[in-house]
Image (cartoon, rainbow, N blue to C red):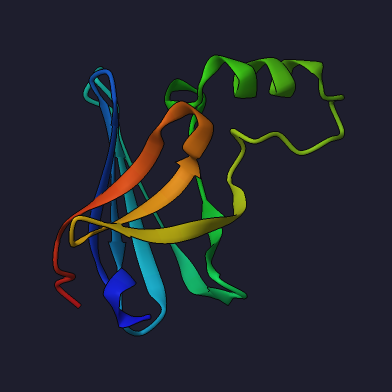
Length: 119
């Protein structure tokens, strides 16, 4: 689905993640916290059945709804947490002509396309 190629944004409060999904199946994630701290990560994406899979994507705790934070708190120290960097598989949906990538759909937390990729 070439429609997923583009620039996305996820905002929660004053924190923001920009996600650049490129046609060469790479992505760049830039996390900007309200404190001014900025972190950038890169990885690969690919189709996984009807979803888009990202390796090394990070959705930090400040972007997670309460039920995800509670699940992370209950998991053991040797278990992966939702808010750790890792592999994510998200559904790509088109709403009113705009592509969204569902991160935590039950909490209405999505990456929303805001432009076209520069790569």
